[in-house]
Image (tube, rainbow, N blue to C red; front, side):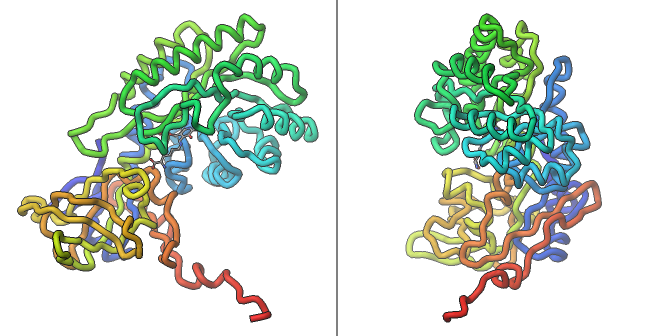
Length: 421
Ligand code: LLP
C-alpha cells in the first residue's frame, strides 16, 4: 500500500502532482511520501504492540534526515552501520537509547563515538571486534552493551548478494561458536553481553527461513540462561520483503511475520528488537525521470531516460525489478510494446528495465520508477560526473526538497590539481 496514485489524469505523490513537481525541481528526482513511510512504520510496530518491542529502522535503506525525523517522531529507533549514520540519527533527533550499531568493520574511532553517544547496544560480529570494543570501552571508562550477531547458516532464499546468514557470508559469528563467545564476553572488561542478534538477509518473502533462524535464536538464549548469562533482548534483524511487482508478488504481512517471531520468543521474557529497512522505505519512494529519446535499435526499442544506473543501481546490481508507471494516466491505457529503459551512462549495464512491456513513450514523457524508496538514493553515485539526484519529501499537499541537487562546482570544485602540473 502506498500513496502514489492518479488524480485528474496525473500521477500524484499524496496531493502533489508529479508533473508540477518535475517542472519545479527538474528531473530526475526521488520523491518520498510521508503518509506511506508512516503507514509502513505503524503496520510493523503495531504487529508487536502487545510486546515489549523496539523497532530500529535500518538507516541504510534511506538515510535522508527528513525521513529519519519522520520515523523518529513516531517512536522509531535506528539501526546504524557507521559513524556517519549515527550522526544522521543524532541530527534527526533520535535518542541514543534507541540506537543499535551493526556492521563487520567498526573502527575504534566509531566505537568510541558510539560509546560517548550512549547508544543502546552494539551488534558485535567477531571475536577480534569484541576485544577491540572491550579495549575502547575500558579506555573510556564506559561499558558497551553487546549483542553477538549470530550466523545461523540458513538460506534466506533471496538474491545471493543480499543473503547474510549463510556460512559463506561474511556476517556474524558461526552459531556453533556463539555460546563460547558469550562466555568470553561475560569475562571481558567494559563489555556487558545483554542481547542476541541475527539478520539473515534482505527481501525475504518466505517465512520459513525466518522461522528456522528464530528457533535457533530461542535455543541459544536458553543455553545462555543455563550458562548464567541472561539476555535482556533478542534482535531479529530486518529482511522482510516488499512487493516490487504490484499485486503479482505479495510478501508476508508483518502480522504473519510477527506470529513467527512470537512462536520463538513467547517464553523468553526478553525485549524484542527489529531492524526493518526496506519494508518501511521501499514503497514510500519513487524515482521520477524524463524520456530523452526513443531509439530504434536493430532488434529492439530503447527508451532513453535521464535517470541512470548511478541514480538507481538495483536493476543492474541485483537484477531487481521495479515497476515503471507513466506520470500521464492516458499513457497507461495505451498499447504496450517491449522496450529496454536505459540511462545515459556509458555502460551496457546501465538499465532500469529490460524487455519490459510498457506504453509507447515519446520524448518528454515523465516516468515513475516505483518502489525506489529503499536502497535507491543511498546507493547513488556521481559516476560519469553526473550530479546526485535531489530528494523531495511530500506530506499531503506540501513538499520540500530535502536534499537539493548539487551544482557542478560542488562536484568538481573539491578536486585539486597538484602544483607539479
Ligand atoms: N539489519 C542489518 C544488520 C542489515 O544488514 C540490513 C540490511 C538490515 C537490518 C535491513 O534489512 P531490510 O529490512 O532492509 O531488508 N542494497 C540491497 C539491500 C542490502 C541490505 C543490507 N542489509 C538492495 O538494494 O536490495
